[in-house]
Image (tube, rainbow, N blue to C red; front, side, top):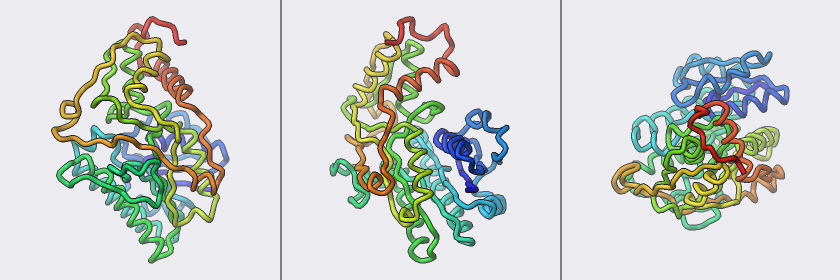
Length: 333
């Protein structure tokens, strides 16, 4: 398989590139490095069937050429992270919607298979948990920038499914639920790497809101394996799939778990949403996927539990990011 990964120097994209190369596939990466990093793919540069270009998906002549040379496009390039979304709503909407538009347009010329990476955010404020792919999406008002990301990704989904219905472009949509693991950065508001970095540095672990909001975290390797399996399954075309983990934990309990596994004595500090983001910020109280559809099609079952995920993130951060003289003195249990 010849695969193009847009956003391939990002957290998930780099792991996907790595996995595809391990399986003997040919991988090309396109990334403008706005949220990705060349360090994420540095170890892949010597691979025989790997190539990368630093540019944007909106560079249409380049994109058209790269799609033409590929058999499947994993479209992961997007604005990500709550912090970035709140601070740069125009960038979020334009990047997500226009980027997907040009990918679909050029893939359609020769009917190349396209994966659209969507998000659990599209379920919005729905209380119908666990979230099912066919369930209603309940978004907040347009005056709340918090929902701009969810809305932009829903437009991506609608457009992709329209291409499938009207033009028979093969598309697969995946809604990712809090994917975590090594290489993820907390720079744009991702909670787990932020907590781990704070715990290792001995800083306060900052929990936004009252900490009762809950999430389910999925190891990036499990997500990547699901993507690879779906690419080989013709029955997945034209469908929407949740990729996640049914395990659920409150953010306050996550902070406690990180603190324990890091052997840290960091205090846990609650910060109101209005201070963390913006006045009137709205959050989802729960975010848990129904994964029965994915399980029925490809036998999907998450393999890596939360404690092991946290340990792997801690080990990676200790090795690559946190200065040794600032890590906690306590031993890891």
